[in-house]
Image 1: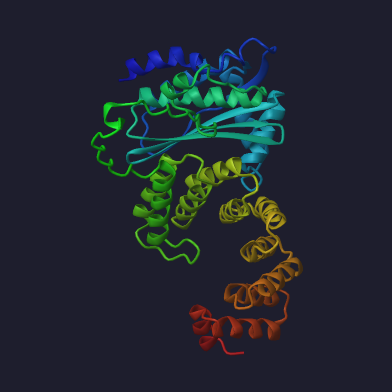
Image 2: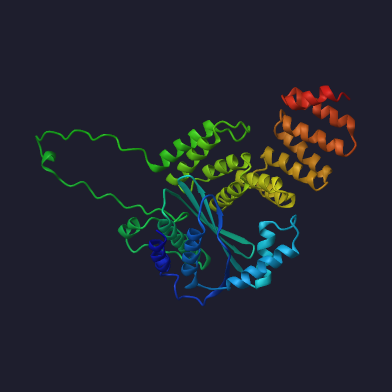
Length: 399
C-alpha cells in the first residue's frame, strides 16, 4: 500500500493549478512536521509528508528540515509553556527562520473518518484548507493532500484555477473551500411517446434528497443526540458521527464544524476541537459562534489572553452574544481583572436576565474583590435560577 501511495507522491504536483505555475518568482516557506491525532503509522505519515513536500517544492523554496527543527527547539526553549501558544510559537519560528510563510498539515483519524487540515501562517493571516475523507486509503489521502496544497497555493498567490470544462471538473473532486461547478441539464429530447395520442410515460420516482438536505438532516440528528449548549452528554460519539457525515456531504457546513468542535471540547479533546473551530472561522470569518467556541478552548488550555482576543471578535460580530460576555468575564478573572469581568457579567445578565451562570460567576468575582455581601446576593440568585450546585454550597456555607 505504501509503495502504491508513493506513486501518488511523485505526481501530487500535477494537481496544482497550472495557472499558478511559473508566473511569479518562488517565495520562501517553511514546512513543519505532520501533526497526527489517531491511528496513523510512521510510514504513512512519512508518505503524506513527502507528498506534500513534493507538491509545494514547485512553488516555494522550502527551508531545510534540519533548520526547521533547530528553530522549533529554540522557540520551545525561549518561550515558556504559558507563552508558547500555537500562534506565538509559529511567529517565533518564522522570526528565527526569517520566512513569512509557515505551512502545517494536521491529520485526524476517528474510526473510518480522516480529516485533513492544511494551514498556512502568512504574517498575521491564517489560511486553512480542509477535506474530510471516509474509508480512505493512504494513497487516496496523499492524492487529496495534493489537491489541498493546490487550493492553498492558488489562494496564497492570488490565482484562481478554473477548470477548462465542466466535464473535467466533474472528473476531479473539488478541494474543500472551492466553488461547485453547476452543469446545465440538457434539454429533453423528443421521444415517440411524446407524439400526439401516445401513451404517457409513468412518472419516475422522486429523486433522493440533495447532499445539502441530507447534510442538514445529519446535523439535526447530531444536535438531538448531543446538546452542546447545555452540556448534556448523550451519546457523544454518535453525535460526532452525525456531524462528520454532515461535513462529508457538505464540506462548507460551518455550523456542523462548530457543533462537532463543541462535542470534542466537552469531551476534552481540545486538539480536534481547535481544528474544527479554525476551519469554521476560515470558512466564515463572520461566525461569532466559532470565535466564541474557540475562545473557550484557549481558556481551557491555559491561554486566557488568546481567549479574550477571540471573545472580543465574537462580541464585535454579535453584540448580543451573552455567552461570549460571560466567557470573556471568566478569562478576565484568570488574569486578575475582576472589575472588567464584572462589567461583562453585568452585560450578560442584561442580555439574558435569567442567566444563572452569569450570576454565579459574578458572585465569584465579587468574592475575589472582598465584596462578600454582593457575592452571596448573586449566588442566592443563581440558586433561585436553578444552579443546584450553588444551592448545595450555600447550605453548607451560610453567610
